[in-house]
Length: 353
Image (cartoon, rainbow, N blue to C red; front, side, top):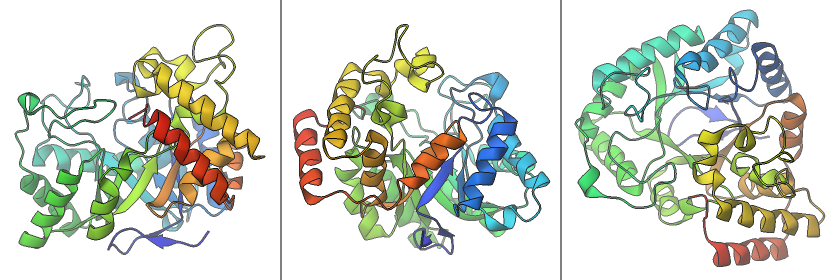
């Protein structure tokens, strides 16, 4: 895999990124370290995490993922130098008072979260530091509509950007990014950076997969013209696009044991648990099989080969899953298959938006 630049930053990453939100919840530390070892051995140089991980978020596992990664760095001399490390500062609480007491995300919150992440990760610098979700009220995590009546933001974007700039100037952060953002948010961060001589966002980490292609409804043009790279998360739709739920559904005795949607009621209440998301996934999975591919191969190849995607974030719970996801690199989708994918999307749209 040839390394690619992230936005206008100096960061060079592989087009596949190892997501780690399962570490400390579904994945124990020894398995997590084995996955990190294998990922690095196979050439992946990009790791993404967050202060709030593991997921589903609980007070007991807050910071666990970063801690596991930090202990991996400490026990693997030279691994940190081979790795581009991304993590995130959580946005407003969203019912997680263990992250922070206040409802917002002040400059002091950003700095304190960064310092805590550095300690847990046992490193002096974070290569890509991202705002996990906006302080503004925006449609995200399954919310469909923007409602100005729900706006409670108290920290201007300029103040957030200045706090991030301070971290860059202090040498704690190399580049900055956003996540779960909107076209307005990206444009405003870029405008203010250019106006005030502050760091420019290099990336946006948003969902992008066969059952959620909302990125193509405006974000793709915005980020293309602004030179901001997409880090695509949930390319397998939380497992729906692997085919493992096709026969059983996501609940009941026959649902796959240990699988994320089947295991956690909190996940089933979100966009990935919608009946429409399962229906659409079954259609795509059947389409993959008709063309001689596994559902995983088709879903990942869709992200791996799209011009909109800089790096695809894969999340795994085993070495076998990691190898399967990496082995899908190089899979080519025929023009006929891509047309058939678009036909399903035209009919069913984006049920996991």
